[in-house]
Image: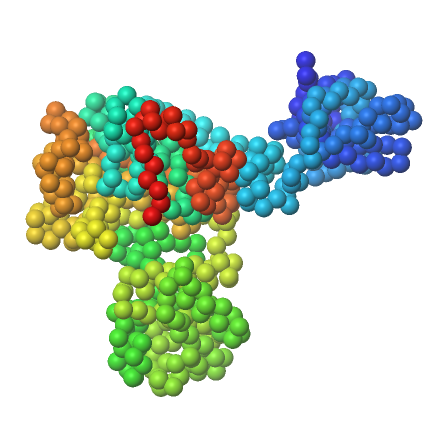
Length: 587
């Protein structure tokens, strides 16, 4: 056999035993007549000892080992003279008797250490080496445990895990689809699913009651730290349940996951709930980070029309946040904040600030426009104390200005150390608008998806004022990240047709794209609803990561490329001919 034990399990109780280990060489150290080798596998590291005085040939062979060589050793477990309390195996070492090189290795392009010298692109290119690093491997182990805990919980709650197809029809109403040409049906295409949305609804029509699936989904979107072209959802659906019933189940699952995976007891109290409109008013975001305060204060009545400062007088929104204890910020720090809000990422025109001095007076960047009395009103409205810094953003578009102030709030939270990755604040955001206006499309679009049910009390407004209709939708937010979202679904073909009409679908187009679903509703569809968690996002939060890439075994880079496999790539002309495809040159 290659091994009797793994490299992480030997302890003092094994002293005197003869064992066989196999693994990778982490490092070698020559100390006088002794050579020490750290042998690593998935489970840990064990120190091997070679004594030149006992076996010179064996010691010489150990000195020739390079990093990442795959070796097998046999020897006796002994108590270490110099113990290492930072390693689980730090009390013992192996007095090596035999050494076999199973595979030599080239020098790796970066160090296989927790703190590596490899950059992101290099690590992605050699991802199979990056995965040997203990901290990256730990993320995948966490993901595995997370999935097991999800399955155990949902199974106990009566959910069935049911697989749905990966090759489906295109539904361009959402994000861009990944298109797959069909060789057997020339000129026709499959799409990779953005979500199993309609399929899980059909499972409800089929009477499956409680369904879930840990499923791959695909969206041809621009990427960022928490988005990949392929991602994994914990997809769930239930019938004969209303919003509160669904929230109760998945709140319980979330508490179960925190307790099982992180050892955190979130208590018996239900999570905070906040309407979409309240979240936008207080935090400028439908996924507010509730680990800290610094709520928005609207300042239109306080500052607009009180001077000839045109920036405020012409604004549709003026809002501020109070940064406690930051009045001592230097001019350089203020300039950094101004540059931040004016960056392409945020897009504000500028930043107004006001310092509350120790004597209670207020000094601001707009002193020449406002009297001290008005600035004192500002201080009172902001509930600012001596030593605080007031930061104000305004703009002609209220929604954009709120979002810009949100970015500033998050930046200040980061600078002040208020976004602790080991602290978790969860809430449900509910009562979303059903539709949002798309300038690009020139029409109303579904804020979630076209299968979300409107609030029953708002259905009559679909004919008269669809923009004011609220959706029976809910998102779970953790630390400013949307980790899950869902809704009560439409189960009536007439209502579904009305929603398609509001979205600009002709009856023919609706039937062409979604006739299968509306037809199914005619055969006794039960009321139903569900939710999908972003598995990658949730695991990355549990792992304290800034990007979801390190909790995915083989992720894409920010350009959507797999630099390890060099994909996407061109295909052979014979394949294109077989699929009857022509490549149009770039314009």
